[in-house]
Image (cartoon, rainbow, N blue to C red; front, side, top):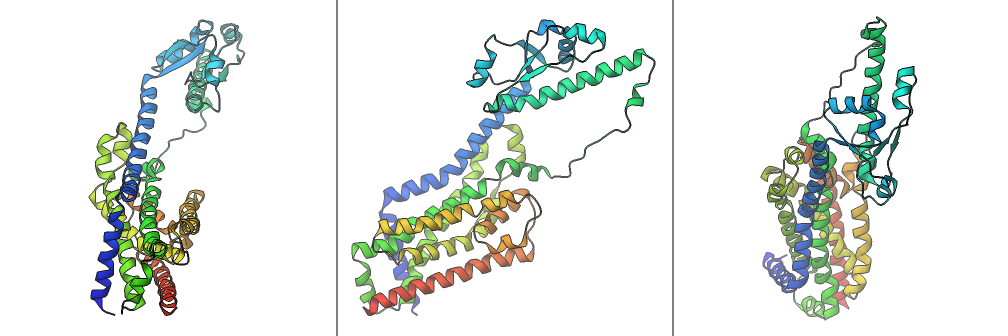
Length: 389
């Protein structure tokens, strides 16, 4: 096999891929900008939640009914705002973003009698903003109940410590970067999709596209072995996919400058080191997916037919990372043997700052290499059959 032939085919395929500038521009923009845009949108959401938390405002219907409770809430640093008359309608249409605390008319009288007044927290489960504030309001009411109970015992000469059989102190072992992946865990998925769609256009154009244009037969008429042609085409598709992977990974570095949330900015530490680790993890996957897409498209006679067939590959590759979402326990060993899922798992470890073991370094590239060789052998066999005919 002459390396010059491989290089000639490679240059020819790269030039063909760059010729369709409109499609290439759409792929680049969607692949490179989608992840940072989602990160910025997520930052805006977290920043909005932090801003609401800093306001420390509660909505209470008829707060004049419970001055004792209002006093407790104000001592906790919260301000009390009267609820609008149509608070139920506003909660249903998401115009009101806080749950409403409804107090009974005999609240103070019930406290004086030693009875437990019934209060109501009104929210709408379809209104996620109000639903998120319900837990905070429940904790405040539970704290008010404990304070009243302790005061009652103290008035009767009972030490408050008698009611506490034990004291609980929580300790979180998670690293800050690990906690950050609960928010930024979808970034590896966007990078995987960027590589997949980056290879898709080039793979279809170099196989089914050439057959549809009638330029594949003259190429096969040249005295070049099918393997040289296949490697040249595959190298061009891989180069396009890796170029988009590099741009997509490094686009997250400047995207951090646009984060509105200080908490998210502190948790999401993505620099050049993490971007290079992402690229190292993605390179075997890009090689395998480029060969697989070529193997699917070489059977088709038109780009439209190839797009329909490649849609199944895209669907499976996009669904595989979801298996890690449903696995809440320890990472299963079989995940490293599944392309796309293995890369998603390893990139999540990079975000967490966890080192790779020898098995994690070897198994995913080995699986991708076997898949790439089998797919390229199939493409070469199809080209050999086409050249004979």
